Image 1 (cartoon, one colour):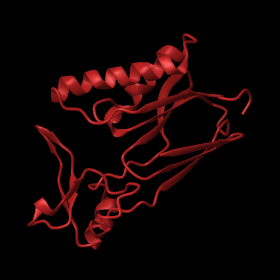
Image 2 (image 1 turned 45 degrees about the horizontal axis):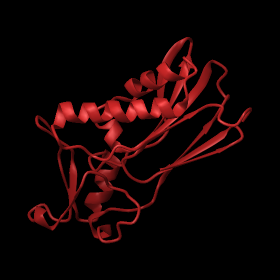
Image 3 (image 1 turned 180 degrees about the vertical axis):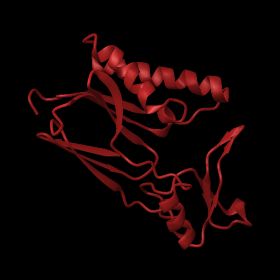
Length: 190
């Protein structure tokens, strides 16, 4: 996941299941604006692309939670890869299962909507988003941002709350939890 901020223009590029979310205030109401696309194998366009390669997508389950995964062969799941994402960087071995590194690129112009105040951006791995909703994370960060506390403190809180959510849902197992919080404007007047 990459974010490039140049003046008032912001580009995002993502290949995988990490996510970029912006906290904004519109009409006095706090909102979470998703700026990237999660590449999950059960997303209709991703599933179609993966299946066109001859690979199989196993459906996800809710109880107990198990994400959708992609496999080379429906009848030989042991051949893998068993990934819960359909795009990633550096995985050359699973190209024949439909795994590609092509990112989805997004564009956002800061200040283009005068009714929208852009407050901060949260970049995080799927370990954050697995058990916390976008708006929940935005509300957590705004609690620090609104009090003038530093972004690194807000980020540490997001990571800690994610770890607690994993513990409550999964016991001793958890996925990677990586996050970055950037307050806007980040360099004076962007």
